[in-house]
Amino acid sequence: SAFRERVTDFMAHWLGLDHLAETEKQDPAFDGAMKGAMTSEFRAFVADRLLADGARFADLFTATESRSFAGLDKIYGPAAVAGGRVTFEAGKRRGLIGLSGVLAAHASPTASDPVQRGMLVRLKLLCEPMPPPADGVDFGKVMTNEGMQTRERFEALAKTEGCTACHMVINPPGYLFEEFDHLGRFRTSEKGRPIDVSGSIPPFFDAEPYP
Image 1 (cartoon, one colour):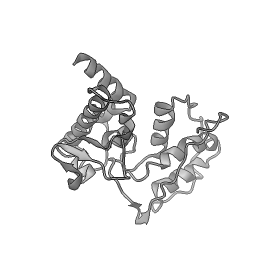
Image 2: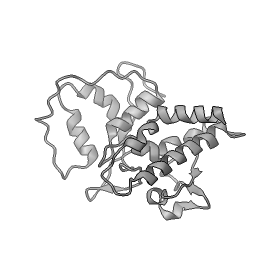
Image 3: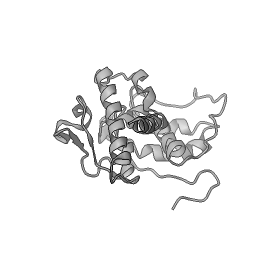
Image 4: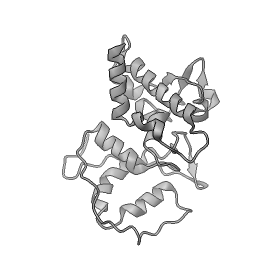
């Protein structure tokens, strides 16, 4: 039991869930009970998929079920939550990075965040040493407006002088998560328009492309 606690503590720290309790979102659904349910789901998922008898490491990233905790029906939908289990709808989410807590931990208070989610892939999953942000960047000339989708706004910001080289590496894997909002709820549209979820994992600067 002590080993299990240490492993789940490490995994929660690795993927940013150890700060979920202090995270704030501009959404009434994201209350203390919701944060607790997300954290409990994550820890149970790690224990079931990594530490249980017969578990395989690959299951962390491919499993399509997790344990249900009160309130998660607001994230996954009532139809997905039954009998103490959450069953992910086919083709929508899989494994650890499809869990609501992981997605919520890598999002802004009001919207998804392709940079945070891109950094999740680059730093946490691929262990790539991303350089620090450029100093003195002026975003004052970037034209954004309230009608822009999150992706459109981040694409505009990425064109700022001094930012493009890094964000051409960071943003494309982050765009793959645009079907999930700031709480990890699945969606197909934003601002009344379909979402573009095309993305990629570009080579890490001058490194060889991934297979």
